[in-house]
Image (cartoon, helix red, strand yellow):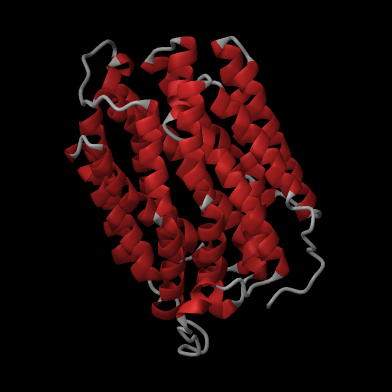
Length: 396
């Protein structure tokens, strides 16, 4: 593991703590300032709507100007957005701030696998698994930290140390530390045949000129993102609070285990010897969807929580590194960040639909409906991968 991979791994720890705290606290903060489920869904949908152009542009610019500038920008911008989240109580203000945070979050999401793949293709699964694994593990730590600071119950009955707004500012400060470490430790990797990348025309930014398998994955990612963003948003902790009247303390533990459950399989990703990448990708995604839908039908808090926690342990924890390896193997070296950005951008359109759907379903059906619909959409996303042909030669 060289200097750059160690830098990315270290940053993943700080990113995980900040993200775990932010994502756990934000729904409670929005509830505290009096916003309805439907308003929350609107905020998440508006924030997602601006991501198409950002993903593609950041990917293109990173291909031309290098990875460090834009990966660093994603960390610094995320820190600022988290810090300023408590400064607004309106739907418009929260939508704008969250849009900035999502833009920065997704820029990092685009460049993270690109950097690791370019550092060492042969160890990509191991590097991807370790960095994502530690990230999710420390997301659990961030959730635990914010739960302790908000409830005091982890602190031997002490009073609440920080309110929701204070926790959001703390998350921003932790992210800022990660940015500083990355900026001073990471060294830009020299690009082979520097300068041969052309910025191309505006149309090239949004063209679908890419490998067949990438187009198939893009369609699947679009459907998957509708599904995941229908359950993994403001409704995720509120499902347990509203349906089972569980305390913030109990829900925080479910969210902690949620983050930890995906970390273990990712940390072991480098040891997996998967011969059938397509089969592993599809069946892990099917399992995740079935488990999510099943958890919505269980009437008991503990039963629903235990079943729900399996969706990452044997689902996303398996298919995430597999999906990323397939994508990186089929992207063109000169357009790797751009093509990665396109897949995530077009696929990310689904995240506009999901939160709004969650708001409508929870408001007008019941709080279980987003979880059930989420799982069914994931099964459909798995079926959409059937046309993928991994025997075809990649760009390289």
